[in-house]
Length: 353
Image 1 (tube, rainbow, N blue to C red):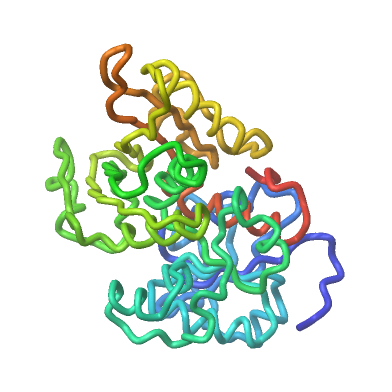
Image 2: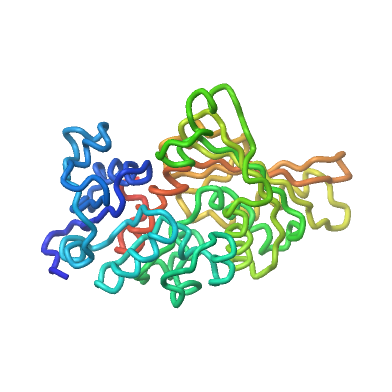
């Protein structure tokens, strides 16, 4: 690896044609301590990045190159790997062995075991020795490990909207861990940039649809990470929905409270809100709010908004209802990656965000 003589963090973008890659490039344009120095594509070599993403015209004209770990390691300090599962793990392995730090956007290193990964993703893992040995890229819980990591597994978008409100409450024993329902709505960009029937305008506009009921790959990620953070086994029933908006995720989460003597709706609600506020007091991107969050409140930002309501009569608390809003392309993907990069290189995590 060539010595970096500048004060800027040099960033490589691996797999540059999707929405997450565009979002990384867009954020880096206003990042005062990092710059995009190399971008790769298997299908568009030689083209400027702005030809693939016209919104970057005149602002980011890095030419797309073939994937070569040695060249990337010589020209970058960190690689952001925006490839699909399976293919990503191979590239991450080659980059890490070439001596460059990597933030992986795929699910290849998020889960804690090879059998769990291969069950849900249906492929043989190309770097099984690192599964369970890669830090999960959520600085609110794993900041110290991220700071020293060679490889970081960037979180899934849906899991971020569920793990962040649920993990502190499960860990504190304030909600029952065996009966949690996560109902999530996502903008169409969550399905990626490749054309698909269900995301065509005539299919998605003026419609909302559930999909992958009881079979979405992000369900196991939610359970696995909440277990790792809270040290308790959880049972999450997850249902995703596609909504006709560009970006954003709103998750409405249902759980049963662990009640104390003489509990009321107000006392349960206050206890849960206090736990969330205490957990995130020193984390600038997470906001525990009194109002009901909406995707517009966090659009185009790396911020998270969450709140709690409790059903039932005044002296007979019922279900806990948690509402959490994030931007799926920012805190759910590229913004989180920039936040992780900032932590990895010891700068203020809000830089550029």
